[in-house]
Image 1 (cartoon, rainbow, N blue to C red):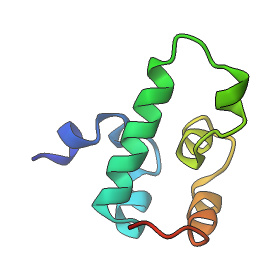
Image 2 (tube, helix red, strand yellow):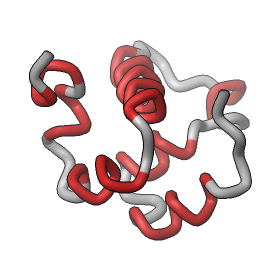
Image 3 (tube, rainbow, N blue to C red):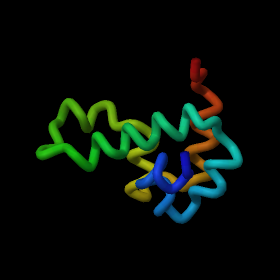
Length: 78
C-alpha cells in the first residue's frame, strides 16, 4: 500500500518524514487513527480533553515533533 494512501492525514503534516524515520508503522497507524477520530468528533467533550492523545496535540501544534518523540520514549507500544 502506498504511504500517502495509508496515512492520508499524517502525509500532509510538515514533519511526517521525521516521524516516519523514528517510529514504527504500527505507531503511525495509531496516530493516523487517533487524529482521524479527533477530526471526526462532532463535539469535543471535557472527557476527551482530559485524555487528549499526544498525536492530536502534535497535529494541532501544541507540541513539536521533537517533544512528541521525547514523550513517546516513556511509552511502550506492543
